[in-house]
Structure formats: C-alpha cells, structure tokens
Image (cartoon, rainbow, N blue to C red; front, side):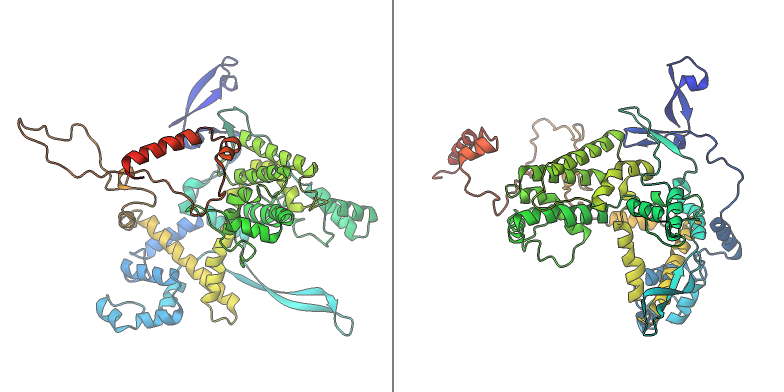
Length: 558
C-alpha cells in the first residue's frame, strides 16, 4: 500500500485541510523521490469487460494440445540448442554441418532435427506475430522518356498491420505490469505545481489539410499561405484521414539527429571550426591530455571517416576546452549554453524546474547569438533543427523525456533486424528472406515467453549461474568496496585473547591513494604567478614548498 496527499475539499472536508488516504501502490508512483503521480479523469480507462488476450488464449491452447511447452522439440535442452542456433547468427550451411558432425551424434541425445531442413520446419511451425504482406505499387516520376511520357517504376512494399501489432504488444503478458490505460498527473514535490496542458506545438491539422487541398486545387492565396507555413503541396496527404491522430504531434525530440549530429556537429562545431580553422581545431583535439574516461582524438577530428553518435558525444565532452582562447568569449558562452541544453535533454527524468532551466539556457544562447557571437561565420540562423529546440520543453511535457524517442535505439536495432537479416540471406531476393529471418527470430522469442508463462522459474538457474559468473570485482570496484570478497568488520567477531597469549602478526594490505596525471600537460611552462592569478591557486607556492620539505626528509640527498 502507498499513500498520496488528497485535498480534503475534494472529499467534502474542511477547506485547506490535508489528510492521508490509503491507495494501492499502482495508484501512487514515486519517481526519483521528487515526484508523485495521482490519478485524475476517473472515467478514463473505464473497464467495459474482462477477457483474455489473443496471445494468452494461444498459450492456453498450446498447453491443452501438448504436455511440454517446448514442443515441437523433444526436450528443453533441444529447445535451448534450437534457440541458440537461431539467435547466434550461424548460417544455414554451418547449421547443417554442425548437426551432421559425428561428435554431435555420439555425445548428445538423438536430435529430432538431423539436418537444417527439418530444423527450420520445426522453427517455422512455431507461432509468430502478425504476418508480413507484400504489395507492389507503380510510382510515376518527374522524368520523361523519349516519347514525352512520364517514367514509372515498380516498387514493392513489405508491411505489417499496425493495429495487429498494437494488439500483439498490449496482449503480451510480459508487459502486463507495465501498461496503464488512464492518464496520470505528475506533481513535483518541491514546487507542488501541476503539469500544464499542451496543445499542438506546430499547427492545427484540420487547418493544414484545408490549406494543402485548396493550394493543390490552384488557390493562390492558399498557395501563399502554405509556403509561409512550410506546408508541402501534395494531393491527399497520407495523414489527412488518420483517426484519433495529429500528425504535428508525431515528431518528438530526437537526441541523435537533432542534437548530437544536427545542432552540435553540423552547426555549433562547424561555426567554431570556421573561426579557428581546420588545422588548428585538429591540433587542439590532438593536444588534449589522455584520460581513461575520454576519447583522445590523437589524429584530430578531420580524419574521422565514419561519424556515429559516440564520436559526437565524445567531442562534446571536451569541446569547450578545445575552443577556449581561439573564439570570442561570447561564442564560448553560447556554446556552453547549447551544450548544457543538450545534456539536460538527455536526462531520463525532468521536472518543471529543470524544464525551465532548459528554456533559460536556450534563451541565453539566442541572446548571445543575436548579439553577434557567430556573426563572423553566419549571417542568418533560419535553421529548422535550431528552431525545433524552441518546442523541446513542450514536447517533453507531451511525449515524455527524449531518451524514450532517441533514434539511437532503432538504429541499433537496425543491426539486428536489417543488417543481420541481410547477411543471413543469399543476397538474392533478400527482402523476402529478411522477413523470414525476422519472423523466425520473433517466433523463438514468443516461444521463450511461452515457456516463462508456463514455467515462471525456468530461467532462475541460468540467472543464478550468470550472476555467479560475473567478474569477482566489477570494473572500478575493489573487494573492499562491496565485491564478493569484501571484508565485513565486526568488533565482536574476534575471540578474546587468553592471558599471556600474544596476537599473531598478520599481513596487512595497505591501500595508497592513486593520483593520475596527464602524460602531456595541456598548459606547459606556466609561471607560478600565472597559476596564482589566473587560476586562483593562491596557496600553490607555500604548499609546494611544504611538499618539497617533506620529500627531502623521506629521501636523503633529494
């Protein structure tokens, strides 16, 4: 059970008084200890009936038809082998070779799939998600042939019914505890302010649809309005008749392409590099002292052949240090405001105070920009990605924090579901083979969830084994800091010594503080007076003298 504060006036009590009301834990959710959610709109998510999802019904049907949840495989061990063969990326030819090895035949139980053909027949008999559909369309281009006829091209579209996909996700028992069917209001405990309502942050879809249709029919006033509002004039926009949707709300913030690649790499970095020069920028990145938590661009950044989100993020960590002294002070301040905005936008949880801080940072950047921070390299800033930052806090209120919509996640999944699928094909008619590959991967995942559904503790042994096989000491963790070998100090754990008994000498491990210095100083040959004046190290000289005196006593002849 949890507790939430409810105004007494809402229940007929005295005005201004506050009481505590016992509610279920799923009705009061604490987030990072600073926020409390409360249900409102009581009629939202109202239960109109009870039933079992299609996935659960399929599970129960399979249980009635078979005694073993791993069927059509002969045993759980055989199922584990099949699961590994599908998920490991082993080619079909190598699967065939593996199953036909004499060692496999002599040292394992007889398999129900002696070759790849019978193996894939069993995999393809497993239930899978919504089926793939292939459609051919003819696209008319803007080029013409010798006879003046518009050129056309036959394209194929592979798709799945989105409604069936949503039903599949909602009906998956694995997600049962993570779904809510009614909105929740989140209050900030520190400010006690309710979330504000957010309307469309761009434009009204009905107005946009009417403008586009009128402009397509030749209405000059509508054409001018469409151009002014940045609307593309096309026939029958695909989103115009979609029910219960607003296309202009369907563009959440994108950390990777809008912030890391767009704002930072394509704009802020380019502006500063234009001021400094490519060679000097390379020199500054190359001269950065190495650090274990930072990437050292020892060859500069102009020679990086393939940019990824990791390169952008590593550059952002040291970018301010790289441009100090080479660009105007106002440009450094503007860059810092923009980088701080980028870092705030990546937080997994943001309250209204932090959103206000993001707005302040963006306002500071624009103020410095308008005052000429980048006037030497840019005469206008009509940049769509820069404009999109104005909507970030509103979109965060509407959609949630941007980390949930970051395209880094689907780009990573692109490797698993596109590149790996292509590599598994024979490179001929590969799209069809890729859909087969994804369906088989999905079928194996569904079967694994079915086994968990039927035997909830089936993976406990595996989990315990994987946990016990983790490194004795995690990275950055010594035994005395919480590892398995950590010594527990207990004043009463030692037995008292007998009279006249002496304590045996024991080996004592002495831990020394480790101070890491850069191999190459970032500011070599700096006079002591500069350290005192420019860096505020007023006690540097007397502290250094004291250190040298202590060292001279410990090391005679020093």
